[in-house]
Length: 190
Image (cartoon, rainbow, N blue to C red; front, side, top):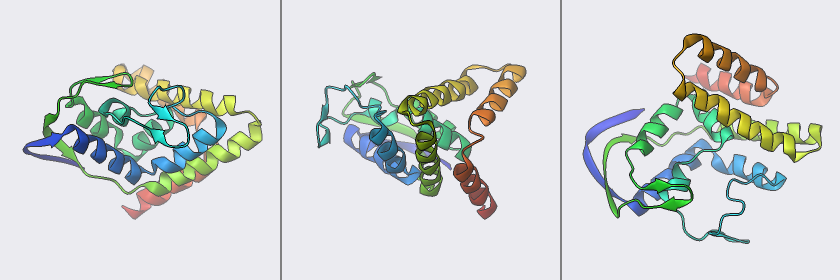
């Protein structure tokens, strides 16, 4: 899905808007709605979050950042590398802060996906697991574990370590039946 073109200039606001459109194409609202409902929002305790209204000051850093759930969905859909490469070109990102220049040169663009069904299926599994465990702590912990496993794939190069991590990840998500079915269905359509 990578599109290599000549340099394109984008404003900081266009980058943020593009990031939100991309994540909407991934189905972010399905995941965020479940997570917020169980008290695990990544925006929790942020000074820019206004009760009942959302973020007062969107920035490139928060737009580019992915929780473990979204990382898994993009990883399984084969889109995580392109997402990360796109945002690596954007300077000025910091934790919940943004020093991105007003205009940024983009060398590599990516297309907005349409994989909302994967996120909807994943959210369905999260709801089922949360009801089964009767505690949101397990679901919040799962998010952190997914993030750790998938981050390993971009850090380690040793095949034995990678294979072990992939097997452990598959075991961790083995009860995500709706998500697995949606993945199989989407790969059959290609």
